[in-house]
Length: 513
Image (cartoon, rainbow, N blue to C red):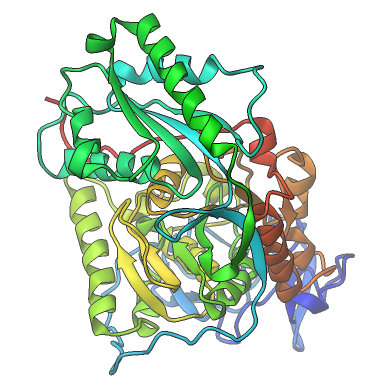
């Protein structure tokens, strides 16, 4: 039955969700007891065991070695013969890497023309034409040796009244920047920090180093400066140590904030939004409720010329054939496959595979392997064409659906999206998450009503209403879209903002020397 037809009270007819006509499994909408019946299109299945909510039940006999299908897609093969009504999970569903014949696009899709009329939001117009949804001062450590000082600078403004139109001073401490070899790892860190310094939500920025580290602050100043105004650099070794650096930083920030106070929000087209799409603590309902609802919102953004940026490369593995099929052209499709192949080589260096990704919490929530997880995760990107593929922390420049190569690890993924220019992030979660980012509003969407009720301090939207039968995917998708506009305009502060979550973790890929 369609999701919007599910009644709130469980019955034999609505206690399980059949996602696609080809599927030989259904998903328990609520906890089900052994002996209970599932009735679907004239078929009656009696449960052979207790089934937790979100877990799979065999709809018919599945022979050993036979494909198990969810979303109409292969999620693995049966390890043993599985009887109707049997629990389908890690004990009887095997993972294997698939060999695929990809359906590459034949031509080149043009960019969509912008509609004559479109919604707007009120943001901060920047010199480069981008628009900020917030107006922060960023204090960025060039290395771990300056991390504590960056924290002290930001902390020194706590409790102090700030000028109008200044949202705050945010520190960006981290553990990298020295002990690096020059090359791809240092280049990626520099790209990441430059993206933070020049972010559209940042009205002024300060880069602080120790003075002798690999990642010198001179890289961010002068001709290499990532922004043309309100950027300063300090080192502890030339400024007189920690206390003197804090005082000097404060003087520079106070002067910068005087200029920032003159900036006011202005009307901007929704095409100026660059929205990161992320998920964490996923469960089986993520691919049924929250992710499809966010996908509806993503398609709305794409139609209006905004960017919707899907990340987490490991959580696209197993669903990449669907993205290849909808790529703008073959070049974009091959770029996506290149990112996945590179990530596979990266994992192999450490003896790991993509299937190491589902966490214990993911599996407890009903997700058996990475194939099943990925098929639900890519739903965040809706059905729009894939217009651009970028590497970690590279600038997002294309309107519409964009893919960024990041780990599935949430704080590292969000950091890459931020450095790429996302001025908002929407984060779906099934098990629950409390993550945020120093300078970007992060909207949390719960995939089930239980998590929403348990973690109301952290959740902004309840997509569990879809599985409850109270709302449709489109209705929750529109709710997310409207909340995006309110958040972008400063009329709504997300739960993560209110709680002060400021996670920032660059992706360290190389050795320590």
